[in-house]
Image (cartoon, rainbow, N blue to C red; front, side, top):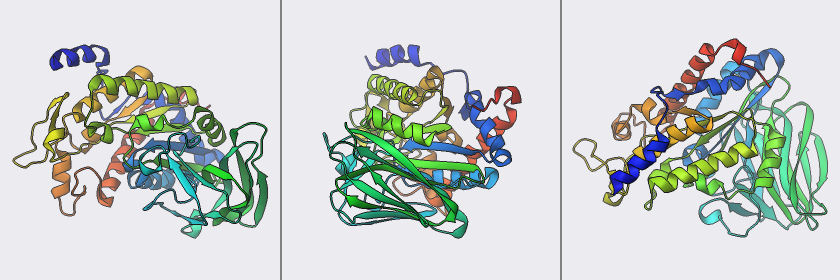
Length: 411
């Protein structure tokens, strides 16, 4: 029965004949064109990645950001969840501060509150009723200064107001509106600065995102919007109208989608269920960001010692050597469906697992000295993350060099 189900599924998910790590790279031609013009024209190229803990940790994305900005220019830190949305929240190159009582809502885990209000692009909101409550951003080094500060928030008849600052520039922003919705506002500074902040003047206030850019010189921003433990289906808990408003404000040139690890560890995983959900989620993102090129990053290699995850509806996973570790039974199926649906739905695809070395690489990486993966065989160490970012950027650079100039049409 399982074999028949998989055979039927594969009839509609047979991947394109691409066997490389990066497939359908021609779909990224508009991004390549904008990157090529970034330094010459002062253009800011905005890359926005949504994902799970790999994205939230900003190890891979942070290393990739460093490589991109070294080549194309430093465009700023990009979009972030407001404040410090959860314990252990990590930022790279910028420090987020928070004072006063704030309540967090999010797409997954303890932060998820059904009926708790609309969620936006970052997957988190920060709310308070108390005047004087504040959040702030500070660049970690002088060369990371910025001149543009954007804040997005929920609006409505009972919404309060906030005071926004970037350097010495200040603005009072009322969130009152005839009907419930969302809005964004941007402040610019005549000179690069290192600090920006939001202070509540009158509650209630609910913030959905904020961003900094160094807009005058051009370059790249790479925003990492991740939720620890999340699957792509959890991102569907965000509100269409709020996400669309923020996308219109932030204008990403590329959206990167990096889920799959938690789907492969889901105890009730089924191939048909995952396939249907992936298609629906990708189509939703394409509807909310029409015309924006997208890159789907396949689930990396990982491993588990739990027998309950080593066998299931997707089959039985073979061991990696003589030890207890092996990939989950669902991982290969997740990766196959991701590759196929990316091709079918018009996304570029990067095979993270293949680039690592394929099946059972996670076990080998955890045993290296120094280790490239942590002992859980799921998460990466800083050296491992830097290696992955280097491969991703190298593959994209090679594709950019091979893409005909005539097809690199910057919009």
